[in-house]
Image 1 (cartoon, rainbow, N blue to C red):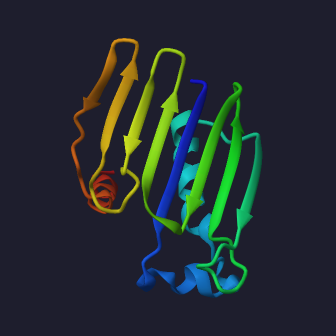
Image 2: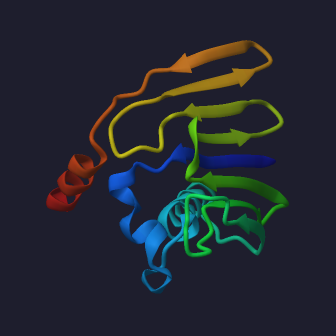
Length: 150
């Protein structure tokens, strides 16, 4: 693997804006709402913690109290693997994405980072692009089932 990209470029529905945008003392903002899940997924995929992180964030308008609602970060993982992450509450039509890139191909997940089962996964190689069949399950149901089975 050489690089990855992950992000939630979404519009935050008004009914979800409570702690996410209104109260800095509750850990508000896009980083504590979305980016924590991004880094957790990358840690799982690469079985490692980032060794360096740099980020830039802005209060672009949705957050009234100077809370960051638009953040882009770059994470370095062991083995010279770079991950680019963009999380924002200000892009209503961007969707979610996970991409893993290597020298022999790329795996692309589009709209797969949601609480509801949806999205598609494709693989691109020298041979072309093919869609990977995905069994769409409700993540919470899967988690509870795995817990009960344990």
